[in-house]
Image (cartoon, rainbow, N blue to C red):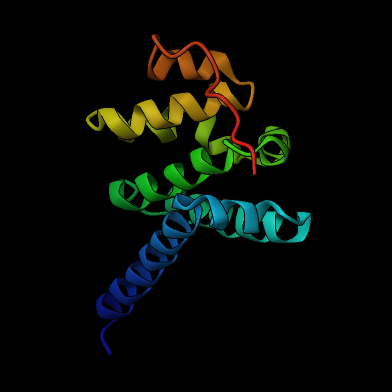
Length: 143
């Protein structure tokens, strides 16, 4: 198998993993399941964090599509009170780095999702550079 095919397969696998996380967190029951135990939450958080780091190591620009899925997962996790608290300490620093997030400048939706996530977990300053009009956290969900 040529190296480029292998890399494409790995990229597709990561995208599939991100899509699975999006689908799981899209439903309230999935979000409740992930956040029911610290072990589950941190397992999902570790996978998402590893995908962020992998995107930072890409020679070209990070995959917009994959970053969109990752950010959406984190944003959905931030709807849960315990997860929101935990994300304050375990959200990848790269998501607060303007050099890394600069690749989102043409994707208004993802940029706004990231800004909302950052406000939700207590990082309003980096959020203001992404979307200055997002100033309040979203309401927390209950089980």
